[in-house]
Length: 502
Image (tube, rainbow, N blue to C red; front, side, top):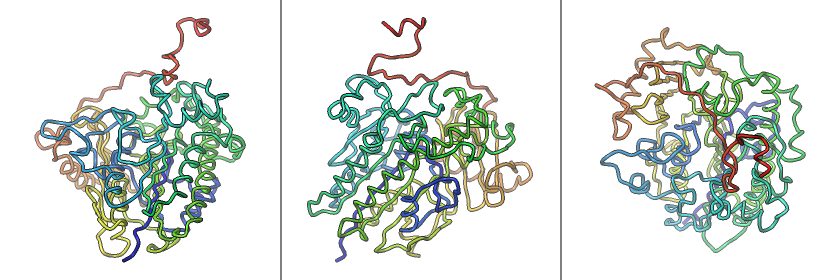
């Protein structure tokens, strides 16, 4: 009987699809991501079906879409009468718990972004959390990375932002306040290597979840000076009226002080964003080396992916939370040298919900849940999906929107104003030409799929009289997000400057 493979998930936060040199980006240096590309299969049409941190992560750990998880945006689950109260009752055991039951030694390291409990138990035998923000002294003390700094490197414990400054500095280029050897990324890689090198006779299932390249764009020395901004491309030239049909985009720009970023500033930010990716690539290389040192490296399945992307100024937008490609199209690399082809590109539609099926199928007890059988598809034993559906924000609210993506087309319905977008991704990959009116037949066909996708418990709140509910367009009230270190009692800017001195 064949030995079960090790399964390693490596995850980044807010990394766009188009940030890997071997997959066509001529500006970036990613030798270790390139190693992974050569080691296995690169899915060129991979998506997150809810492009923001918390809901994306619940699709990964449950294999279920937002109507079951109840999580459509950052925040706690929003469930309806008739749905089970707990996530695992609604969706099944979390992936780590399932893999443990299948005989795996399990570990999880890094950012997990659970709600409402920051330290939710997810089924890992070893679980080391690291989050970007600390809401209380207790949370900072329990955070594995912050505790590591306080214990091992107290000279840096005075820092309020261990990963850089946020709030108005969210999209200001920075340098990491930490040396490259002890950033949160290095810490996650170090812990991952220790656990990869451990051996108790069982195969391992592990997740290493990096916080970067999520803003602030603050790579450590020397990665902060790896890229010349004058060699970076400007954000794409697109029609702002089309881009901002989704009111979420100008709203989010204002939230994080990004509404006035010009091209020169955007190039500097991209240089730092790429520097952060190259730094994570460096950390990834050490993890891959640890895998290669094992005698069963060829029987180790590795999945690399991100929870969502970042607009980086494209479509006159920053952050995520849209269904433009920059936000919802993610890297997904899957390698297993003993079983899968190497250096292969595939165009089937896949998404983060498929990860549960990849891991459990490799373990010999496949559960696809709301996903598809990707390994079966690669073996020619399962059919690819015809289309995928993405959801954002609470169904039945003005902020709700839904995406349907088939092999060529992407349809987006925005409840706020009942606005519709249709792009041919094959001929218009930059999504510059909204063809919702020119190709009404295609828009209507994909619209019907969206209606059908909402005709399930929880999502059915988006329907009214059998149609997607529409609201009169409203501009969202502009506000700012203040992300100071609440564990140190900092809530916002002072009323008078001198107040910060006590």
